[in-house]
Length: 253
Image (cartoon, rainbow, N blue to C red; front, side, top):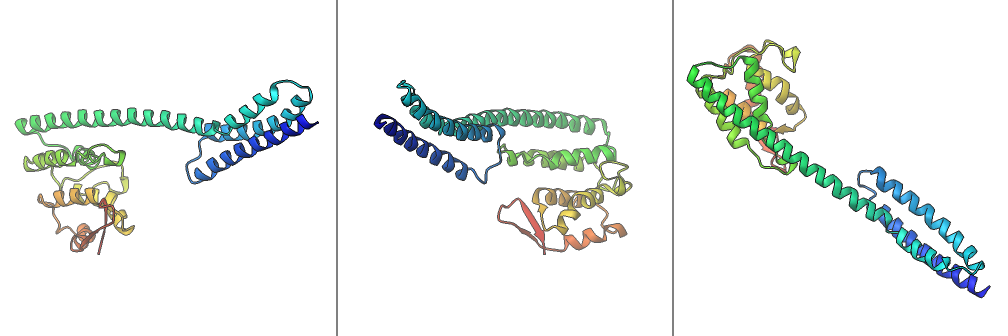
């Protein structure tokens, strides 16, 4: 009986340590996004600790060597969710890095292709259609890859667009037909971009600074602000841009 009591005491102590370890892990990661593998590991670990705690005294009563193994397993199991979580995070980080390399590689490939296209069009005197020009602008709008921890290629992209504007390949006043915002179909390019992408952000006080500079670039290259449909834009251009704490977004006052 004395041996069984000692085994029970040791097993309960090991179970308490393991449970506290599991509880600390759960509380530490309470605000982290849920991960199925980690959640399952924690659930299995809780169950395993209970099973081992019940099994250890029974094994001791039969005078086997299993109680020592049960105590060791109980202590080890408390770390199982941490091990699974670390492995899951590593796999996720590796996948994210691979995806980042793919995104950057594709962007640089597209940028090189657009540089060649601009050079060819300038040489041939062949301008973009309004729809093609919008695709160009949308590409430039996505040149800042820093949201993924990658370089910001805005400088190269803006310079290329400026070259296309100066070469009269892009007409800010060309009217876009169709596109992602069908209700804006027929609007001049600069207004199409403003009404579809920027004006909703103005109302939300969260204008992406990069897009605002892009709009200013279009406006500064002979956009026709005298149009009646440009009234809201004229009003916004007279307001003062105020950046937020991140420096990535702004509001107009």
